[in-house]
Length: 102
Image (cartoon, rainbow, N blue to C red; front, side, top):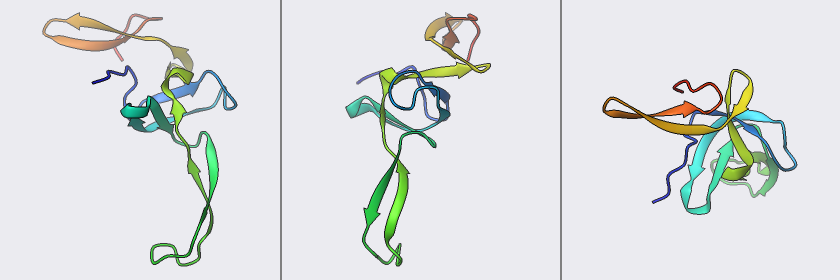
């Protein structure tokens, strides 16, 4: 099982690709594909047929997944790398830049 240093609910910044510089909150992590869904980033248009849930149908905007390597955690407005440190009995995530717990 893969272990990612980014968790759902973290605020992240896109550091590579078409959406470089965009920030958002992680909605979901797709571990089997090494990808994450970030709120408001990498929006795509999906054409939908009318259905019971959406009787109008039409074009729907939704987030597409980004590769995990193209994002970095944000701390105090800056992108930081994440590490781990054992404090007592617990293993906590720390910012490599400030060496503080996240």
